[in-house]
Image (cartoon, rainbow, N blue to C red; front, side, top):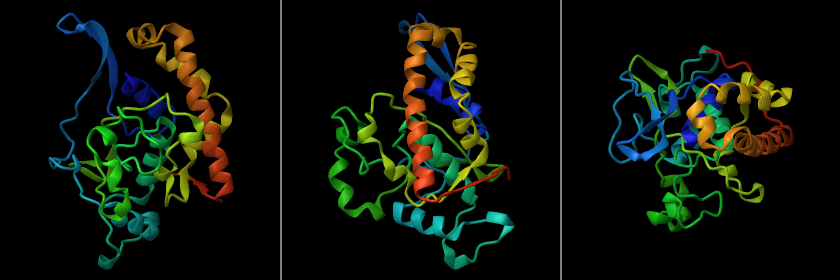
Length: 246
């Protein structure tokens, strides 16, 4: 059900990259329990079976293209820079979003940046021991749209609210030196809780499935704590906060 929360968070932060997700109940599925329904978008680019991505990148390649700031300020990258069609700012938006929700399956599929639980997919698939050669690890779920290959679409947004603050995956932020102003301004405004409550209340089934306002507040508590950690990280690393509207 975290996909539903992720969708609302995405919109409130002004990222607008996640596919719409709502809660629904069906007597034919999960015995009538609430489950997330994601509105699929036919404009998404085809993905391969291994990485579920429309563009294939290893961690090492990704770190290199971050340094080149591909397409920033309309600058056409040189062939030797290793850039893709994806605009530099898209990675900043993804990293911020994934850090707040601790989504690791895009940028850290092997769980190299934190101590995973045995039920985490990287442990189930035996990927954790492969952290010794991180540069060769493929990014996954990196998806563009057919008609707009500069921008990313965030799919499979399963977040984790049970990860302790001393075990957050900071590898997600590695190489990111700029963050979107629209999102950071919301995090700094102290209105994040209010905005999330108003937005999530509109999805009655999700609201009820989380135990009403009390349950929703607990989830927001987690995001607020992580947002404070992220803001501290931004300040400590001298990262820039920029308009990213292109």
